[in-house]
Length: 431
Image 1 (cartoon, rainbow, N blue to C red):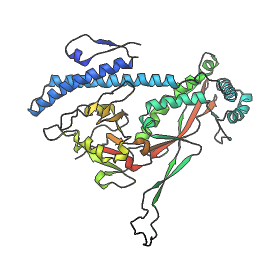
Image 2 (image 1 turned 60 degrees about the vertical axis):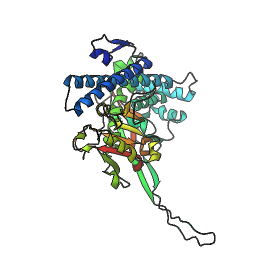
Image 3 (image 1 turned 45 degrees about the vertical axis):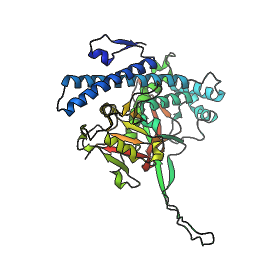
Image 4 (image 1 turned 30 degrees about the vertical axis):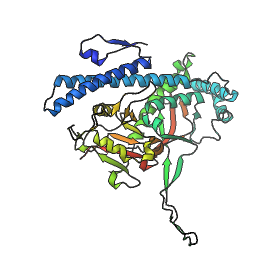
């Protein structure tokens, strides 16, 4: 596939658009890097004008146009990389399918299309033989074959940023418990012949994560199901995956924990100078409704530098910035007091942009820049946030409720929440 990308520098000078192959990540990256060089030059000139009390509206519009094009190019690069990753992990690699798994897939496909009672009686036994289940399911329904389940999970993973950043743990029950040591074990220095007094017991906290049910209920006519050309696994994955992805993505960011995961932004916050376990520390932006204007002594990047160092060093090693695409467009304009832009384009086709040398990921479920909001997070989300998946995606076939449609009530159980409050920090829009 070939797509026309317009080089912003050439557009501003009235030069014809450059043809770029949208399936070639190297071409997209090269154009993004060239666009950012043009962006930096124009932004530098704009800052100098602002320091003189001048503002060039035409230049500001040009910067916004280039900024938007960089975001578009990054989206294209992400899409190409996701497609290539899917191709690398898709299928069974040419290997042989386990006979029990193949038998289950064949039976599931027949049940899915026609709802045969004879097959219905055998499916649970086939699930056990295929190692998809170890016992009966009191809620009814059947486990989706492995290939279909992996397709749904793969699509969810590319849509929800938190699924890629957090720790994802498959479990076999509805609840996962974890103990966290808060320290507190006594210690001290003693001489060789001095008595060793008893020390205090370490302080432990218990975290409990519960799974909640996420569902979708797609429908198809029996006539379409009778069509042997319909790829059952692909159809169900396409119907369900987008809805699951959107619901999960929103919950992992802002879910209130009531019948859904508790999102990373839904916990109590406290000024980082007063940080306490159970809350997430924040750094203020320095302005009540946004970021401070750049001057010779103050930079809007200062609050992000403060946020960077608010995180302990051992967490910074694997830390990532998280914000919406619109917020990243604002941050792209920021320079530190030495005059260096803190945002940088990817260094390679398989990499992501960086802020202050750390990767930045976008999720449009994050807050916008407004008074009292938390539009930016910085943290080691692998250590800070836990997603639990109860094994299996289940389907109930319902041909009766809405004739002539056959509904497929599809469910999965997912939970999530913060597991280490030290590992994540927020930026709050405030003074």
